[in-house]
Image 1 (spheres, rainbow, N blue to C red):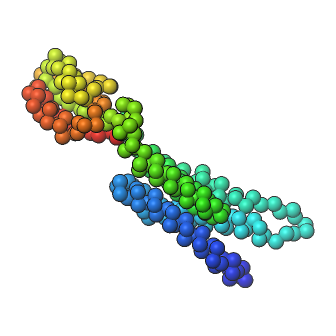
Image 2 (image 1 turned 120 degrees about the vertical axis):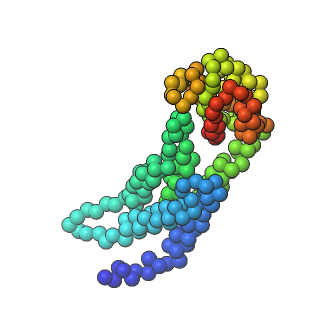
Image 3 (image 1 turned 135 degrees about the horizontal axis):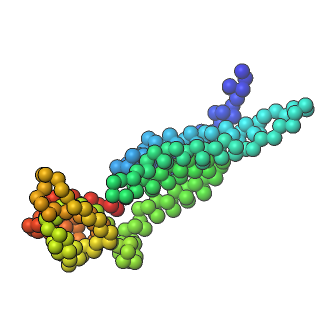
Length: 242
């Protein structure tokens, strides 16, 4: 039972690694919390800290296992760490969502989960500077590059995307709706139309779903106001897809 009280378990280096991995994970966790994402501060700290702990255990066990004359024992110092990378995938898969309009969300959060595990592994293996630089690069890419691309990037990156689901009375008004949206800087890209035969709707009503690419200067309230002025619109739902 002496191994339970081995000073290696409480040496300053181990405590520093655990604390430093938890500190770096706070950066990712706070960024996700500010954006109200499902994986936030607590989850990031837990993933990074325990990944660091498992990496330390994996390395220390490989080098501290006593040799035996009758058995040739060879151990991979990062065997446990390798399993973290694949095992963390189930958490990432749990935050990836597919909505009814075929919009997929949660990919960045899933990548952040994987990254938090990577921080723990890097710090546990002693790569402090590399882990800190990786966190800095990720934060720049997530927080600063998207606004910059909205200013100087290609037009495709500057536009905002919305999904509009509306009920239009009269088939001839569908083209009028598309023309009106284009005039106001909302260009339809994908169009889905369905004839409605419900008793609650007027005869000749059509459900139209549009994916719109909208200029940055146009906001969702303006689009909603335009729709409210069209007398052939019976119902409308506007959703931001990015």
